[in-house]
Length: 208
Image (cartoon, rainbow, N blue to C red; front, side, top):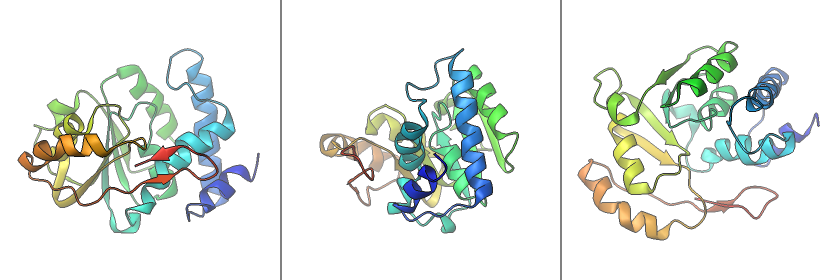
């Protein structure tokens, strides 16, 4: 078990220290623990969490140099994906996790007692997007939420600074959604720069 995480992350070009590995392992333990009393994720087995949550969350490195990013907001973060793995792997990031469910926020606060420069907000994406403290304040907005791309863009693009990026994590079949979102993205002052498709290392799980 000890080398699974490091080896899996090396496949996408990320090297972590022993301390970072411990943080990922602590996160996993808390996920397992809290999942017994509230539904955070259907995936709790260590190897699966590494593959489908940690590696998936960090696969953003295929499209973005995270060393050029300072502030990140994760909209609809759920159990903390992708925001928490990003913070652990790239400690310099200032991360905000937004979720509409307060009990999820309580779980996240337990995890992040160990980490600095990260805070949670409980509320709806559309409400905070109107708040001057958050609107157009982030270099990067990420979301692994299930909404379609047009809706997701409406929730997420308002958080992005001019010149910043919104990178949604999607499953492999995305062409129709991309086509259907073009108008919303344009109205919100954005443009679709690229769609990158790949498979999670060692699986046949398609991602875009």
